[in-house]
Amino acid sequence: MSSADADETRSEPDESDGFPVPELRERAETCAGRLREAGEFLLCSHIDADGLTSAAVATAAFERAGFDFETAFFKQLDADAVASIAATDYDVVCFTDFGSGQLDVIAPHEEAGDFVPVIADHHQPADAETEFHLNPLLEGLDGASELSGAGASYLLARALGDATETDNRDLAALAVVGAVGDMQDGDGGLSGANEGLVADAVAAGALEEVTDLALYGRQTRPLPKLLEYASEARIPGISNDQAGAIEFLSDLDVPMKDGDGEWRRWVDLGADERRTVASALIRRAVSSGVPSERVDSLVGTTYVLADEEPGTELRDVSEFSTLLNATARYERADVGLAVCLGDRGEALERARTLLRNHRRNLSEGLEWVTNEGVEREDNVQWFDAGTRIRETIVGIVAGMAVGADGVSARKPIVAFADKGEGETKVSARGSGRLVGEGLDLSAVMREASRAVGGDGGGHDVAAGATIPADEREAFLAAVDGLVGEQLNGE
Image 1 (cartoon, rainbow, N blue to C red):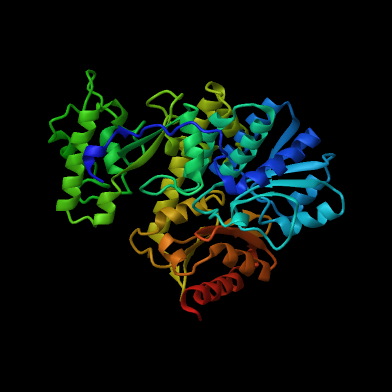
Image 2 (image 1 turned 90 degrees about the horizontal axis):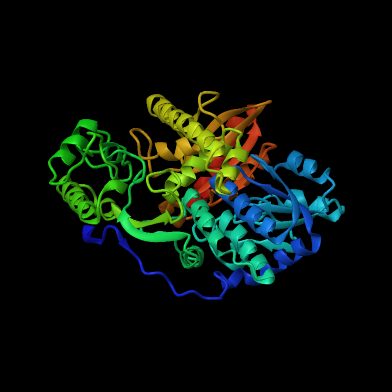
């Protein structure tokens, strides 16, 4: 894609009364019908960006429908968590962004009459059945790349809206935040079932789909920092080089500082100025020998939340998702949910404080991993952070570490962190290429963890588990063997 395409806003799709993901319409309507019948229920959701947006989409739709419900967040939906849910007085429980992978734990409670589950999820289902189950994988759609938990939640909201003649299409914008936060966007933007959600959000005027420089921080970072921290590009002499980034910008025929002498941000540049910078950046990347696929990825499809203030973390979908990750992963899911639902006062300020702390912790965690290095087995690489990296962010750090010095991009990475009370949190990350070769980390985490008395699951490219702290070696051996079977037929 040429730099001349930068900042070109795509034309809006025609409005349509059609359901955005036809394959899931019947499931969505069945689930929505059960919630309407109940009227009163418990909403349970996961705590990452996708989980928060899932809960926010559901909350907004449920409030518009006049339902009586309570919301609860869980880091992990294990047997104890499900038992605590069963102990409540609710006859119906709606699960968003989890529930499918825990069906074998939920099913006995359903059979006992404790509650009726209504699930809107995208993770690999466990080997159990339930009636009210909305999941793209059940209809042959990829839950890791085509529809997130927030996307499933939006389809439920859309079905509710259709049944009550309420226009819930604006909620699709939050579902896009969840999908991007779940890393489902590629150079060409969101694909598959997600495209229907984008179309709904654009038609509702809540989202803009734009071809632009595809670097994180376009709204908030000063230009030198935007380029210096551009890990997506890794251009010699600019990436991770503050002086080099400043020198590159200073050589361009574009004013890079405002009238007060402060560095401008990408959002402050006009369309022609953006094209000038993008063209120069691409020329530098090519002349520096950056691989063509990384050069091509410099410009791509980006998403802007139309109603949010330009220059804030909420305007860009990627930055919004990072802000949300910084809330629930530090036990403040209530803050993230409030921001999603429109609180631009106290909740937003608290979220920004948590974001600064989150960025510092990620930076320190990544530095620790790169300094300490990783251990290598036949088929995986791993590190054990103990208490040095928070268990709620160790998976993010693991993903960031892949490709850094001493960390191979050719093997899955497995990260351990102390969870307390005799338990260890495990996070595993792969790549699209490895998945194409047969890797399924969801199956690996589930089987290996259960073999040592734990539990796990997730997606083929990213998954996690909780295991007894003294079972790390046995678990790791099982993981290495399972990955070897998937990739090498061992």
